[in-house]
Length: 453
Ligand code: ASP
Image (cartoon, protein in one colour):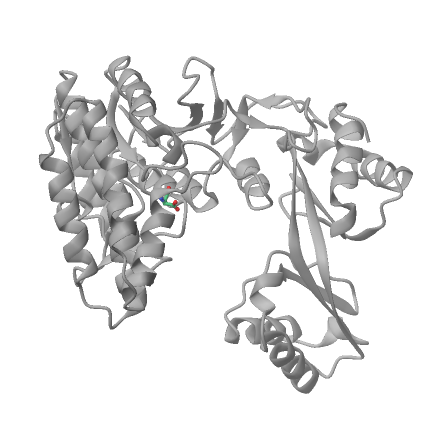
């Protein structure tokens, strides 16, 4: 059996939902369908989730919100009318949204989650009704009834282990299940959401729980490309990726699939296929546990800006037991996660997202490092971009780093930092953000033979 997840643009309006219906109809193995909230119908449109967030804020600030509320209901009303359904569901949606908005606002995060998850819930109810009118035995299933239990980190929830056992029962249901993405419930019954884009995570959890043969993730692009096509327009498609390659690529800007969503599928070894709702016969990109590869082959190059580095130099650092731990403790106390920690005999750098250092956090961290670690050198650099060169075959590559460095040098890019991942399937280059595009183009030409530096 297959679990299919359809993203926001796939359910943005009635014509998109018609494509979803056809995709489900065309394969009886597609038994569990996870939907996002309706997304943008055109570039200047607003996602339903963003409309709901604005609505929640208006309600929390006691501002009038009638127009915004009507606009949300109308998004669903349009779809309902286009499929010739009567107005019952739209009326229920309006009532439900009004009662959510009248709910307890004491804990803002809890209130916000309750409102912002409504888009997925209404969309799943609507898609189930549409499928029924097309003669498909479909059923909406609520995450509470199915036992999708989450931690109470509202807006950033994690799945609780017992969910998998609870959700396994869905395999026995004979109908096509339509399940809303993005949210579940805490053990004490409050609604909690995953981070933004989290419907991918719901799909992956369900695929793992029911031990699906395949998790299909439908978006609006044909596949993952070896380089962002906005930077290198002739970037080749990637047909097969391993989970590890996906991870290394996804967290630096391969935005097609939520990086957290890889985890449940990996644990259950369910392959993932990224496909396009607008072109469903295209093979898409498969993400699998293992694959064949050629030695020296680079699979993809990903990049992202918005990083900072904290550099610490201290003579005899390598002899100081616990130095690294104490440094990372300071980050932990400030709720900062890090991306990489390149180190030398007497120095360490911590690379982290610049956003985490906002406000007084940067100064607090630096003060503590000064006081507790007494470094000889301490500096912070912002506006850094990371470029990841990734490939299973890179482990056996002789001279690949030399070619990469040569290409960067030839295009006049200064390498601020270089780090080979411990798994040896990636090399990270840190460059000034202003050089990001130039560097990606140079590396693409040298390592993948595409684009012009
Ligand atoms: N609708 C949610 C968002 O826009 C979740 C999702 O689409 O996956 O973030």
